[in-house]
Image (cartoon, rainbow, N blue to C red):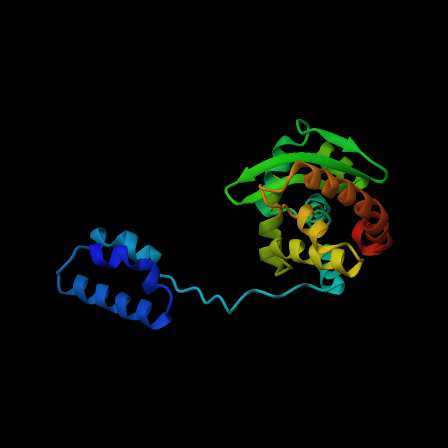
Amino acid sequence: MNYLQKNIDKIKKARYTVILVSLLLKYLIEKHKVQETDIISIKKQLTFKNPSKQDTYVPTDQEIQQTLSQLSEEVKVVYLMYLVSGIRKIEGSYLLANINKLKTQEMEGFVKITMNYLRHNKNSFFCYLPIEIYSKLAKDHKLSLVRSLELEIKHKNLIPIKYCRKWFYTKCIELGVPESIADFYEGRVSNSVGSNNYLSKQMLADRYYKEKLVNELNNLEFMFS
């Protein structure tokens, strides 16, 4: 068992080795050579992930419109929050739980919320939102709305929250926002970035959200209908 544990990363690199080791463990358990409780940690790690099979699906505007049209009014604003900010699901929950505590700057047509929500290599420095959406969230910021939204999406077979992030990034690129700024919106900024470079990204992010995104999002009639 120690050998398997030490080499678990090598085993997971190929599907056939995962299958072989799984069969071996099953055999050992059936022959009472080992107790299942002794190998439970190894079994949990035996998952093969093929790096070539990445999820490249990006929903179209029409698919997003269809989803929004079927969501109840109570949870629609939460879906819009994810859709126009590019933040991750867990970051959205953090925002809702602290929306009246976080520093917020009101800009021209949008707000810039200081998140500074850091988790290992996944960060969220700011959240940009149109004023209309932020105002609705600030009035009714129940954390349970995220769970309610997920249940409604599952029940009605709608576009999951995780694809809001992909839609937003794609929309940024379509509108001419540089990839580095689209990454900045979504928290993909290296911790080693110099302070001057970081400040310049903030300024550009502010400008592009005002000039490119707010106007375009307001022009998508289905967003706020």
